[in-house]
Image (cartoon, rainbow, N blue to C red; front, side, top):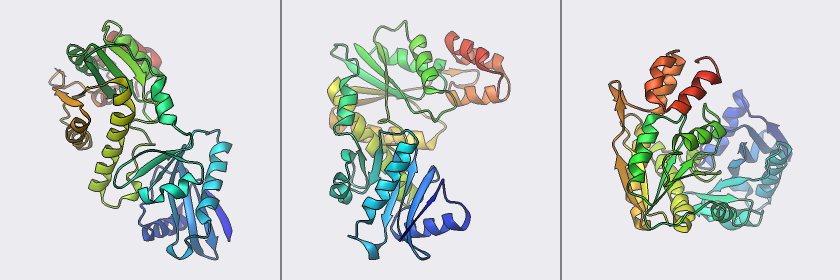
Length: 328
């Protein structure tokens, strides 16, 4: 058999890979950056792909099971990830494949009925959570936010939530897949909340709302994919973050615009109480005739209206935006 690589496949080769994956019950993920196929003649016998440090879309033809092809594909993906300098790796699969991938050096992080997330570090998520600061308190809350960028809307949510908490963990997404860099988003959140003693700004690492926790690519039905995405992410939050940090409240802003976020918030309200976590929705701050949101700020920046942005963001954010670069 021959190994065929692409970064990623395109054209007819991509359609062939998509057809192969479809026959294995997997949907190709457009975020893929590298793929490898194990081929016999013109037929694909096995394949796997990378999205950054996440191994995805690993499949073996039903006719070629139990021939060690999964190990061959995973080995090639790991080699490519290491070539790119990526050593902390994650893998998505279905729960029934747990033992197969454990034998290849991956360890479970969390799972739902549909998906299993694994990583190549034993107890990696527990070690990450263990090093997070944990000030003492009786009423401990959390907010998970992208802050792309940090706005007065975020500040209002945080100030309101802090009134109900002795400690409020503000988790800022660590992944660099947003317009504003992760370090800048975190720094602006720290500056913007410096006057609120209850707030502890924390990183999410690769574990919350990241490429490693949204595995909808192998679920054909988009509604089912969204539900699986949210369930896995929320289970990781509840089991690996809320439990060790003593979090009993999670605060969210109301979501009038994004159906996906609104559905995620609704799912949160159904799942987290079973872990003893109360979900509290806070109405969004409004200004200038509408809710204050990061997407609104980005739209104004794109239009070149930096002056209108001034009323929607804290001073530190405005200084960053006005000095960072010309408006988009």
